[in-house]
Length: 267
Length: 246
Image 1 (cartoon, rainbow over the protein chains, first blue to last red):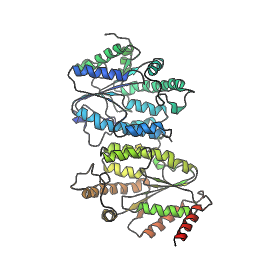
Image 2: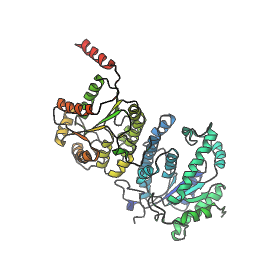
Image 3: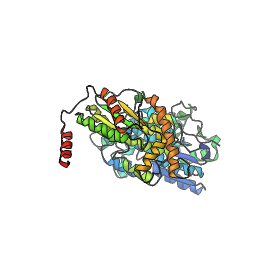
Image 4: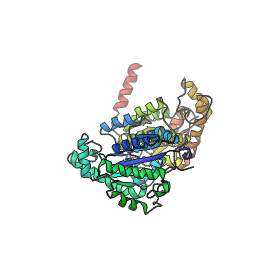
């Protein structure tokens, strides 16, 4: 066994060899359609007979309420916010994700440490400090990065109820109003995400396409991962990647998958 | 305040103020000593600001919730206390230090280094987490033996609490046994930090007055050039209050 590993030193009392399920991450900006795809994937996997836990990486039982209250105020410092998010993430990881993995579930998470890291990096937090801090996180089997143009996001976010203060990076004073700020902030976030594609072995999914086209892509990737690991694109085992700060072992993987998945590919 | 790669934990802080911290296990008498020091500093006209462990209004409720539901793991216990510490560093510690005040902290990052490691968290990881911390001008450690601390605590309160007894990580028959094992681990961590961080050791078995005298001597050496308010309003009011009671 020993299929799972941690990015760093791990969690006291948690043995990776006790974890049996799969950890699948859907990452991407606000409005890119992550939660829709998580929902579709969950239904699909369940009809195929898998036990699935769908979860989102904020609002834990422990810190969710406190974090929400803290974000309403304006006194939340940047380091404090980064640590508060890490606490929230750790609570969810230990009380929800890890028990499900122990029970052999496929865990689909709407966002993971990558969003938390990108948010902190955009706010000037030291990259090495963040990597070390998240050394307790489990390496996922697969990270699907749903990527769209910021222009596309704007319309979707407006349709879904408007701009959010934090998702627009209003604390950074990047623009005169929510729209300007949202565009500037999401562009910065995207730069951070694009940097992570190689470092963390993301699988790029072109999210400019229809919900169905994106879902078809995800299904194909998931099938490859679950039923024919050796035939999957790139690093199908998900375990050949090194820890966060090393160079990827499969250096050729990310560019290759980026190319193939950015192509519109109706199935 | 940005976490820096260079080890700020070992570099002197750049601010005009002074940061004085006290450490030690529960029952070591550190809070009494810090309170006596505060009275003295204020009577000498220094602008004093006080910051207590686990007191950030932003985070306190979350910690209380986790303790009450006993849902804190060694990892979240460590992270939530670091969050509290970051908030206080940004709001209660750095601004007064910039203004030239004497900041007194009852427990500091060394508490996390001792407790979290006693809970099984990796030593280097928790030190890394606190890279953003301001290094104290003086960090006192009140050294007390386990038996003595147990005796004092038993006299002072009716029952031990779950997390302070380390009952989340120690397998023991009862809370008292758990407390003993856990506090023993914490003492071992403190002892190893004396050299690592240059903690100033005070023998907490000495009479209260002797400990305070020693503390004031060490602090006085670090106060040259520190800002004084020039007003003794607080002390005057206090002495008036005492006089009226007499």
